[in-house]
Amino acid sequence: MSGGEAAPAAPRGSTLRSIGRALRHRNYRLFFSGQSISLIGTWLTRIATSWLIYRLTGSALLLGVLGFAGQIPTFILSPVAGVLVDRWDRHRVLVVTQVLAMVQSGVLAALALGGVIQVWHVVALSVVQGITNAFDMPARQALVVEMVEDRADLPNAIALNSSMVNAARLLGPSIAGVLIAGVGEGYCFLIDSVSYIAVIASLLMMRLPRRIVAPPTSRVLADFQEGFRYAAESKAIRSVLLLLALVSLMGTPYTVLLPVIAREVLGGSASTLGLLTAASGLGALGGAVYLASRQTVLGLGRVIFLSTAVFGAGLVAFSRAHALWLSLPLMFLTGGGMMLQMASSNTILQTIVDEDKRGRVMSLFAMAFFGTVPFGSLIAGVLATRLGAETTILVGGVACFLASLVFLRQLPEIRRNVRPIYIRMGILPELTGGIDAACNLARPPEQ
Image 1 (cartoon, helix red, strand yellow):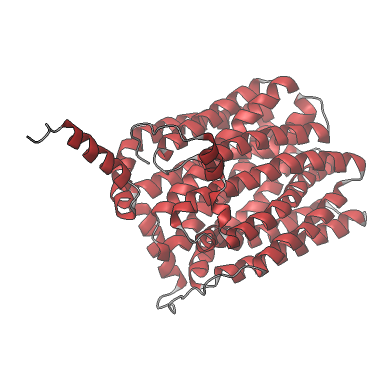
Image 2: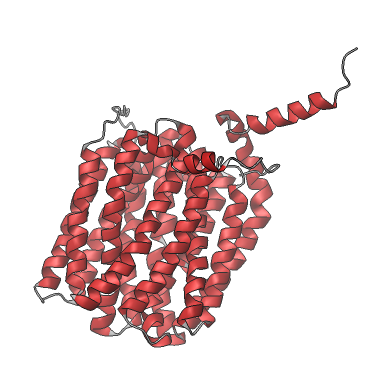
């Protein structure tokens, strides 16, 4: 996370090659291709469920309840899931979670296409998906290390994951807006269910080395406490997770209010909602491509500060915008800021964490990023009912911007904390070598 002198600009060809360097690993390439298809379906379902609830009820509060129901299982179950992911075969866990997610979307499709779907169906199935995600998230994050044989390509793989998610976030909502307007929400759920076949097939085609896990010698609670202490005692891990949790609590829930903004503020329809979400996805995709092009993890601390500040400021400005032409570029900035903050945090955590605690730390990451969202969604729904959607988004933006300033003050200490880890991992010798070379040049020539 420390900075340094700016490196010379890389040739254009080498920069383009570096963006996709993790794809040279077969297992990761399979995962990337399968997920790229499946995630488009996931975004179809996200947009369709939000629009369905708002169409059936017209309630901002119920949008908050839906977000709460889908995310609260992650907060409750992630501590246990992280311990179990460290004990179990992560690949097998991921196959099971993808099959369960496919079934959940299939049930949604059957209910919607059958014309019998009700609000409680959507909320209950969101809870089921949340339970699945509680195990899927830490398993997915921890498995990336096993897919990428060269540890130096890990940051690029994480950035490509973010690129993949946000490319789907760009395409999915646009497609969802057309499908909802043309044939209804049910076909969005059906396409999502079918799309899981791609990622399940890619997982089954992988050839991963057998991961040797020592038989557990302690209880699940004791293992979780050990992982929690490990994270709490590290200034870098603690600060990154706390900032991520606050942004997820106060800022990210703006997404559940987008249907209200689209219809009530901008006077639009499902297509307007799709455009807003797509603009945010396009900004996030741009941020992910930038991260993928980076050659090193050095300097990501400042990226976290700047991206959080941009995210907060973008939300403040978006809450005051009342025209689509202004709202779309603001969504672009907001989406880019949110993605950069999340992906940079993920990269730093994955880089500095000890392997035997990876699942537990990534479960804390899931709690911070996904687990606090349900509380934020519920708070956003209540505040939007009382104060209005625009004021609620404004409050969240201000909170995120102030949090970025607090993180900036902590950055020097965080850098001192991670420097020994980077030296041990061989990330910092390039700077040390540069200093030694400069010292040699400064010496007088030998006579």
